Length: 155
Image 1 (cartoon, helix red, strand yellow):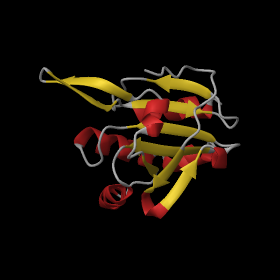
Image 2 (spheres, rainbow, N blue to C red):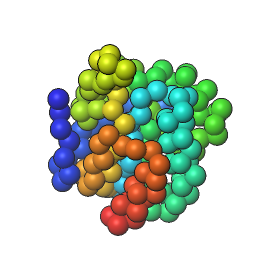
Image 3 (cartoon, rainbow, N blue to C red):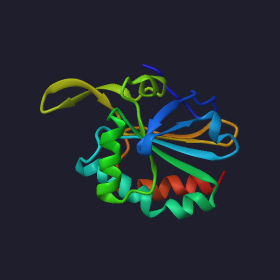
Image 4 (cartoon, helix red, strand yellow):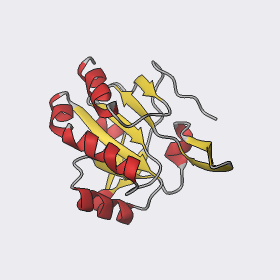
């Protein structure tokens, strides 16, 4: 498994997004980026996380920071998820899992004694030069978006 650590170059990414768009790390040069990985669109924890980041969208923008939520869901599913909950962040589709692999978030998980591969809830704060400045693994949703905003403001 890849272990992304602070002060290393962020792996490049190129993702399809909601709204038939694309987003790449290269296109965001000069801006800070919050790349948060979540297991599955429209599930309770993932919805809460999306709503929490969306509630702070204007404050992230004021800190010159773009917020991108990444899951392995198809872009069309992300369109429905975003519209249903009026989310204000970019949602990236990593259907083939390349970005999850690059960031080490495709991991073995365990639920009710059953082991399976899935997306770890993790967040990476990348500065305008493309360097990972903070990495949060095994994220607990409550209060997380505020913690990330505080870190973004300190860049």
